[in-house]
Amino acid sequence: MAKITRLTDDVIGQIAAGEVVERPAAAIKELVENSMDAGATSITVDIENGGLTLLRVIDNGSGIDPEDLLMAFERHATSKLKTAEELSRVETLGFRGEALSSIAAVSRVTLTTRQAGAPSGMRVENEGGAILSVSEAACAEGTSITVRDLFFNAPVRLRFMKKPTAEGAQAAELMRLMILSHPDISFRFKVDGKPLHFSPGDGKTDSAVLSVYGLATLKQMKKVDGMMNGVIVQGLVGVGDMSRGNRTHQSFFVNGRAMRSTLLSLAVEEACRQRVMIGRYPVCVLYLQIPLQSVDVNVHPNKWEVRFSDESGVREAVLEAVRNALSEGAATATPPPLFREENPAAAPARIVREETTEDHTQAAPASHLMRVQDPAWAALKQTRIVPSSGQEPLPPPEQVKSPVLEEKQVRIIGTAFATYILMETEETLLVCDQHALHERLLFERLKKAYDTGSIGQMLLTPRAIHLSYREYGTFLEHQALLASVGYDAEDFGEQTIRLHSVPLILGEPEAEGSLRDALDVLAVGGSINDDKRLSRLLQSACKHAVKGGENVPVEALRELVKDMLVMDVMPTCPHGRPLLLSLTKKELEKRFGRVQP
Image: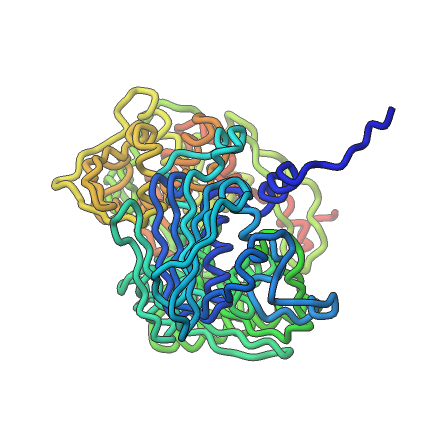
């Protein structure tokens, strides 16, 4: 008996919908792109209950011809391409002919449309992929598509949806990209009847960025404008204080299409490498114009990915354009020492000598040490040595084993590049990364405070913070976890929260920035457990430790080293970077030819 049978139309429809319509935001993306392809200059998107109960897209585009109305609900039916050859030069955002049929297969859809000059419009009712009715309707020019009860006939899919606030945050993130991708289109986005986003559609990138990020962010960003290898790169980039804890604030648009690209992200990060700390990511909004034949958009049904025929050429164009933008901007300001473009070979290390006869008991300023004070722990773990660039590798070092170092045995002899603490013992030269060390000490202190339930410190006055919809949804979902690590806050409505406390290593100036970093960590956490989330949150708070390139008073450095020597410190920062390297006296003597190898 034959085992292979042809699937029914409704099963085929639901399978196709699973690829195209993963969640409400995916349905919105397909419908909005159809509106753009129809020449709309104004698009309104409404959602209720995260888009699961209702999502509606209204545009003032060209409308649908009555003769094409029913065909629009058929699978693989489109007006945007007819031959396989056209796939190599697709100019429209949509082209597969799957969107409307896939959405209709798993929801209840009402479509009304009217073309310019037509005396009346048309209405179509569709439920689960079946046409229920077709009739004339009084409506404005353009098209309105209302989707109700998404996944009503796919209960398994419905069970895998997130909370409405999380699904709404996904939709808000999508609308952010839509606004940025087409500054020439006016967008309105409402959530549960409340306006969330509005863009004027004046064709200016600055206006779109202002609509999404606000004036403070816009003022800090540098303009990008360059061309290389036939690739035009334009947009905005932000570094320094604008950097974030992940890549969610990097937006790329290729020929008007919002897309994700590790290639482009890495190019931007390489261009910003000297201006962004390790573990931080630049913010950017970049628009690339590339010849159509050099881009393949037919990679995945969701159309988030593209392929470039000349990846190295595209990477080089982005790298050069962003570097030029930052170098031009740097001429108007005095960057901190770490960020200056200098030739390391031409500039000797700056050494700050320490007088050993001074009284070492003076406490370091709280602004530099973040109040790290916890005696009662014991010595160093083993470290390793890194050979100098361009030299033959040094022989394996004699490892520093615990416990061999005591406070009286270690002497601070200076600092280098405002980043590294130089120390010596009787037989060893030690180089310590002050930022990595401070992060480790803060992390250990936070863990101890968390274990004892005393991790938070109250702000003098509660801080009102307005969040993006994505951040707001993340806050509501993880409010208890945030409170457990010191961020005690209450929902104040209208995407605003009132922050009462922060982790004890932070102060008022770091309150808002550290909270936003924590929300970023939670937003991209995926399916990790609470223990992992907790660890990441503590690491996030520690990012506000003393930075490399910051001139720290000698007294503060002494306190850092003292804490390192009395605590059971791991040889890495919380993110895994080494904090202490060693070079023995014997190895130095071999290098300078003072003894035989």
